[in-house]
Image 1 (cartoon, rainbow, N blue to C red):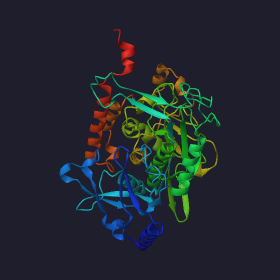
Image 2: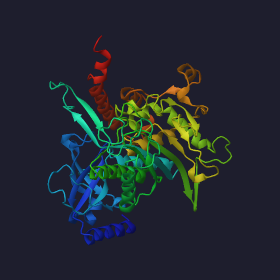
Image 3: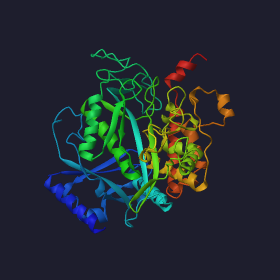
Length: 499
C-alpha cells in the first residue's frame, strides 16, 4: 500500500477507537446479489487486516462459491467503504423482548481472496467490477459512469403459507398475500386514501403514505454513507411502489451505493413495521419494479474530461458514433445479458406487454417504450449525455449487471456494431406483424431462454467472468427455472381444472 492509503487506514482505526465502535460488519455480495455479513470485534481491525486479510470465510457455505475441500478464504476490508452505521441497523424487530438494545457498529465492504495464496477470488463481485473497469481503461476509457434508478415496494406485510418450501404439501397447497394500506384491496385503510392500480405516479401525501419513509432512507444514505440523493418519489404501481435516484458515480462505488441503498431501505421499512421488496414483479395486476441503468464512458487527462458519448453535431440525439456502437453491443448481446440483468424467474413476469416494461429490442431518443433510451431533457449539456438501459431489474447483482453491460457495449465499440435505426413511435402499440416487418427482435420471455442465450453467447464476458463461474451460474439458474415451472400454480387450477 502507498503512504496515502496507510494514512487513511491509520485514521480509520483511530476513528473506530475514538467513536467507541464495538462491532465491525464485514459485507459482500454473493454471485446472486444477496448481501452477506459477518461481525467481528472492533479491536480485530488492525493495519494488518487491510494487507493480510481476515480468515473469516468458509467459501463452501456461500452459494456459487467454493467446494468443501477448498473453502478457506480471506476477507480484506476496503478502507474506501468505511462508514459508521445508524443505530437502528441490524436490529431484530421480530424479537418480542429487549428490542431497545443498541450497539455501535461500522461497516466495510470487503474484497475476497483465496486462502493460502492470497490471490483475489475470481467470483468476487467487486473483483469482477474492478476487472471490467480495467478492460475499459485499456481501451482508453478511464471513467465509467453508471446511474441506476432503483424501484421497489414497501408493503405492510407479505404472508406466505402454509408451506412454500414443500413440493408436496398435504395441508392444502401454498400461496401468498400482500397487504398494503395504500392498495385498493386493503381491508385496513384507516386514512380512507387509496392509490388505484397504475395510478401511483407522483401522488402527494396523504395518498402517498411512504413519503416520510423515503425521506428517511435518503437522509440516512446521505448522512451516514455520503450518498447524494437527487430525487425520490412514489412510482406507478399501487401498494407502496417507490423509486430513489442516487447521483451517478463510477462503476464500483455506484454498485456499492446500490447495495447500501437496498440495505438502508430494508432497515427503514423494518423499523416502521413494514417490509421492503425488490422483486421484479410482486403484483400480478400492476407494474413491476425496474432498475433503469444510465451509463457513459469518459476520457480524462491533462485536466480535461471528455464524455465520449457526446457529439453536439449529431442532430438526432447529440450522440457520438462511439455511443451508437455501444448501443449496438448492448442490443447484440441483449439475450445473454438478460441472464445477468434479469436473473430470476420473477424477472420475466415483468417483461410482458401492458406494464411499461420493455419486451422488444429497439433504441430511441426520449422514448420509454424502447429498451435503450437516450434521455433528452437538455440540449448542449455534455455531462448529462448518456444512454439508459430499461431492461434490468433490482433483483440483479448490480456489480455483475453493470460489468456485463459495459463489456457488451465495449464489444460493440471494438467490433463497430452499428445499431438499427431508432424507433420513434410507441412500440407497445405496434402489431407483431409490423414489428417483424421492421426487424424488431424480442427479449427472452423466460429465465431458461436467457440462460440458453448466455451459454451460446459468452465470449464478450470471458475477459472478466471466469468460464467455470458462468457455467455454474447457468446451472444454478436453470435449476431455479425448473423448480418454479415444474410446480402447478393456483392460476393453472383456475384455467385448467375443468379440462
